[in-house]
Image (cartoon, rainbow, N blue to C red; front, side, top):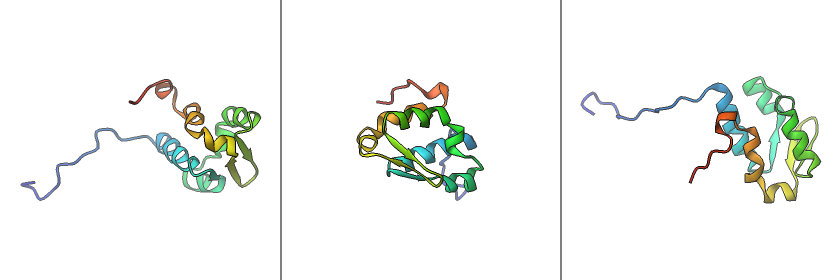
Length: 98
């Protein structure tokens, strides 16, 4: 404060990949992801990048995927929080935050 600055710092700076995951997960909770948004912002095709995970969610009837959007089905919306951990980095999977 004596230097006319707030003493607030982020202790942890996320990587670009972690920022991508965070934004994708937060937006997925709205029920729809625009694939081109992530392609333009992060230069990543999120369907290709997480193809195994999306395929499993699609086979279970939780998502519908086309060339432009990923949409959660009603079943997917009802269990969205349970669908998210498969997108986490390995070191963050299985960690409980309570």
